[in-house]
Length: 209
Image (cartoon, rainbow, N blue to C red; front, side, top):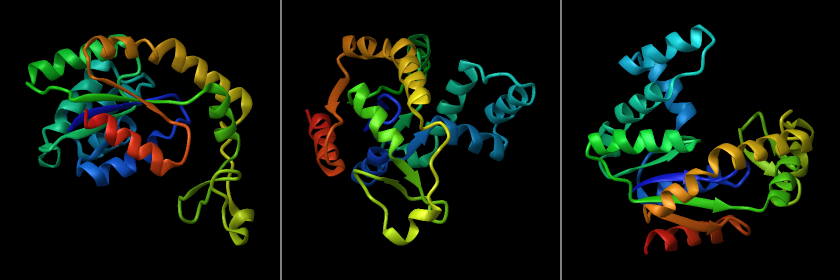
């Protein structure tokens, strides 16, 4: 299964990605993690990306796509992969498609987790992280144990204003990739509201068709 996971910030992509890795036995390739790993390993694309970052520049799309090709060529991607965090724009989607075609790799699906904007705000504002374990809780939907509440951290960018900014950027920049993949016939729309287990079942059911 070769797939891309898409959805607005706060849609639950991270939670579902961890579950889908277990279900399909494929690696979760987060663009940010991949970038850091390539730089650390000193791969050709990692070295080039590091050069741009040290200059204070954004890593060019062709370099990111080169790193994706490097990553999916590794043995653990033989059965497939799940890409998350890229593409974020329609030009990136088109460029990635062209590169994958050249590498003779075809995407099986693009999974879109859909969540209303109002719920995204509520999810973010109530989110708390345990610095000791890295576990993410939610004051309403996944309350933390009472004995650790005082040490939990609320991210500075989980405010109403920050969520609104992130959501607006998603709608303006990333949403245009949805019709692009829909026209290709590989888009799978999934309702991202509800219990995480149920959402996982929705995704696996969508991928089965």
